[in-house]
Length: 268
Image (cartoon, rainbow, N blue to C red; front, side, top):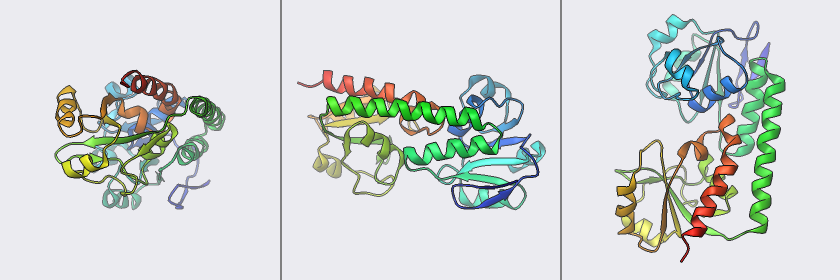
């Protein structure tokens, strides 16, 4: 059977995979929610959902620091990765030994395409199509709510500190921000720009969002940013619901509504 990944690469499998290694947390959770169990034999140390897999599955290292010896011991008949989350050099080495299917995701449309393609790849076509329809419906409802309660807010979404780094254009997070009705003040920067105090002060976002991952922002960082942007509203937000592009997307629109409600309640 011949499959095409989101990089346009073709991989051939003799049958549906029975020994899968997943190198991406959001895609690991997706495999679980599509109904796979024993077929997934390896995950990364960052694949924290579902908890039962995090506690029981063999860990293959981090998303960017893979343990090749462990992967070899698992004898996978399929490895599933992502262009951004995994290191190119390591993936290329794996491709020499195993079938590797890669996702490449910047928008909700890309994520939905990935969900259905992986569903076909692992023989879960029906649940993947159902999941796609459910996510589409949830985001349509969010869009309808935005249409009736539209109030554009400028936003900066930080993913890292020391140096401060924000989500810019050509990122999945940027697409999620736009679906909340936010205007990303760093959308004129590609990917994840470093942001110094002067740049942030000049951008003057009405709202600053501090993600729970990959950097664990805390209340003390709100105080730090308040000294730079005293007029900005600053919130700690669940990074998984802004950046995970698998089945967790079902929960994102409802969470975005909560965030929007909180930003409105803080208005003076």
